[in-house]
Image 1 (cartoon, one colour):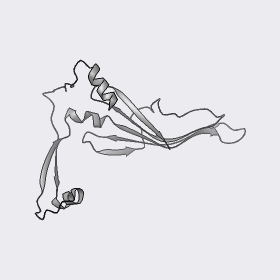
Image 2 (cartoon, helix red, strand yellow; image 1 turned 45 degrees about the vertical axis):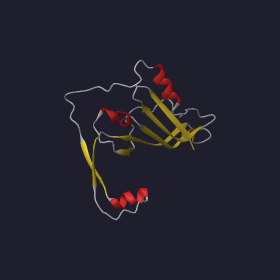
Image 3 (cartoon, rainbow, N blue to C red; image 1 turned 90 degrees about the vertical axis):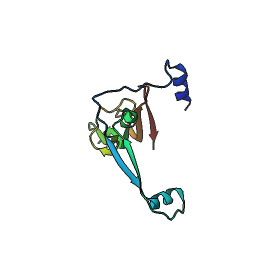
Image 4 (tube, rainbow, N blue to C red; image 1 turned 120 degrees about the vertical axis):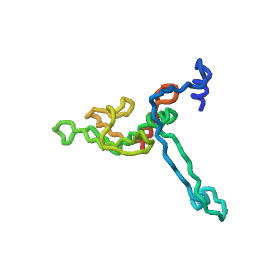
Length: 152
């Protein structure tokens, strides 16, 4: 939050202007929630059962920030000698999660871009390189890219 406040203070326009495109065709998704689901979430005991429709335009530029999010899940990485005299061997189990145009999240075995440099996938045999973790990268509404990396 502190970083966001700093950006707002240093920005010429603290409220970003979103581009408008007259050829832009919005995609509207209809969502509804039943009163049973609302009671389960909010703990209310209203006995009337009615469905509340909600329309959200997911193709709006407002959701570009969500569509920019990528999750790099490195389940296993190693770079080591297979045997005492052998060549170095790389082993990588990686999946990438991202949001599509409908802001639906999905995992893929194929990275949509090259593996980012901030993922610490070393390539030394001596000592061997190992890594396991999750990285999340995004581009904010001001166009700045950033990431968080969690080793486990």
